[in-house]
Each structure stands twice: as C-alpha cells, then as structure tokens.
Length: 365
Ligand code: NAD
Image 1 (cartoon, helix red, strand yellow):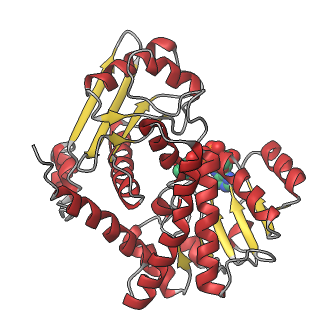
Image 2: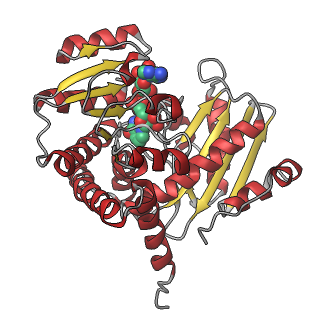
C-alpha cells in the first residue's frame, strides 16, 4: 500500500493527475472551480484508513496548476503520516486554493469552497494553513460543519505545536548530550512567527542562548526585545556556532548548501518538509552525525489540538498528548542509532506500520 511507484517523467507529463495520485496511492482528488466567485481549488484525500482526512487549507499564488497539484499531493500525504505517528484516529488530507491571499479573498469564495468541502460528506475535515485566517474559516463554516480551529473553539494551534517541538528538542538533547536541560545550549530559531515566538519563550525561560532570524524586521525586533534573543542575518543563521538548529519558517532549508555550513548537533524545528530531498538529505544529516528529529512527528501539536476539537477533548488533553513527543523522539533516535537507519525512515515506518495494522481491524457488525 505504501510502496512508492516509480513513474517515468514522461508518464507524469502525459498523465499529470492519475499517475501522480498513484505514485503515493492517493485516494481522491476534488478539483473545484466557480467562475462567479473566482474559486479555483484542489482538495486531496490521501488516506482514510485511520479516520476522516484532516489537514488545513492553504491559499497561495501558485505559478501554475501543476505546482498547486504537487503541493496538495505532498502535503496531504504528510498529514497521513503525521496523524498516524501521533496515534490519532485521523487520515491525511489537505486543500489548496489558488490565489493571492492579500487580494483574492471574499466571503463568497470561502462559502463556495465550504460547499465543496461539504460535498465530501465528512471524509475531509479542513482547518487553517498558510494564507488562511480564522475569519476565512468562519465563512467556510457557514456551509459545512467539517471545519476545525474556529475562533472560540480550540483556537490557535501554535502554542501546542511549539510545546511539542520544545519537548522533542529536549529529548534530542538528552540523547545527544546526556541531559535534557537546554540551559546554556545555543539554539538558532529561524522564523519567529506564531510557532517560533512560543518556542523562543520556552527556550529563554529554560536559560538557553537563543539566536533568531526573520524576514520581517518588526517581528524580529519585537521578539528580540521581549525575550533577549540575539538577532542574526537570514543567511548567517546557518553558519553560527550553535548546538541546535530549529527551522520554524519554510521547508527545504536542510539541503546541500546549508549542510556544508551547519555546525549543529541537532536539527529540531516546526517547519514542514525540512529536508529538501528526504532520501538524500535524510541520509546526509546522519552521515554528518547530526540528530535530525523528523518534522512531521515533532510538529504534530497543531493537529493534536485540532483532534481535541473534533473529539470534544480538553486543552489539557492536547498538551498532555503533545508531551508524548518527548518519548517518541527518544524512541526514534535510539532506533536510528541501533539499526543504523536515518531517523526519517524510522518515523515513516512507524507511521506506515500503524496504518497497516489498523487497516486489518474489522469492526464487529
Ligand atoms: P508564521 O507564518 O506565523 O511564521 C513563520 C515566520 O517565518 C514568519 O514570521 C516569517 O516572516 C518567517 N520567515 C519566512 N521566511 C523566512 C526566512 N527565509 N528566514 C527567516 N524567517 C522567515 O507560521 P507558523 O504558524 O509559525 O508556522 C511556522 C512553520 O511551522 C511553517 O512551516 C508551518 O507550516 C509549520 N507548522 C506550523 C504549525 C502551527 O501550529 N502553526 C503546525 C505544524 C507545522
């Protein structure tokens, strides 16, 4: 079921949709168009073995439809793995709306999108992602109940995400340095937005020496002042003397260029898809003796928070569940070292094993 089909590039060009779906065994795609509101969106359901597919909606000005298709396929698969390894009874899905989030939003567009989500009858549950605000989701919610992360409900998932990242970072420190204390450790946090700022708060409280970068000067200054963190330039962050690199901005920052500069012992951050090429850079970090904590396992606090809303569980339950990331990190890092396998592969296998074994469960009639 999880075998990756090796598809020739020519086949992908000739059959851009179904062949791409079959590569990672996606279940369903819904292409959404509405001329009146300008809505152009794709909803991807990757796998529903464990439950309804939950994953956010991203609004982004993609250069073309193929870019949007690739993004939604990759992100929805990531949600299947994240939900599985976190022990949630949720499948993986994601949606993308093609458009500029600063110019193309309207109530009508989001309500039309909500109707498309509703047409899937609960197979896909949506939430916020990049470019989407709580207000947008309130409009989606006017047309469907299959939405989480609404204002007044489980709210901003970032504090829970940051707490899970902090827990996993401490666990990695225990494995690497023999103690999980981050006091005196040099930690570079790249991107101090929602998650990054909460992470900086945990780190400075514990006495870590924190370095930060961000493309927005005002955000950077405010966080530096509030927590006494040291500001570094955007590119300098890869080169500074540090113990831990915490990518909390964009994906793909662990690549050939940065790996030649990074002098850290641990990579542990909130960003999705940190390894530019999973197979290449997942192995490269191991070869350089850097402990890479798999991103989809580490940053699951946000979806744990959403799950609490779906199931009517408390905020305390979500924090306790996010704390499990500590032991899961230890487990993955030890298994990686004992078996000589890169950490990303161990995490992928753990996620796949749970889906496969739960797929065997036949509920009694
Ligand atoms: P955010 O947009 O609030 O913060 C990202 C920050 O990164 C912004 O301040 C932005 O200015 C900065 N940034 C962008 N490019 C940068 C660069 N090249 N160098 C330095 N800084 C840069 O987003 P967020 O909600 O804090 O999420 C951060 C990351 O974590 C994203 O990759 C997101 O997908 C992932 N994530 C977030 C959550 C969550 O609960 N919010 C959950 C799981 C994963």
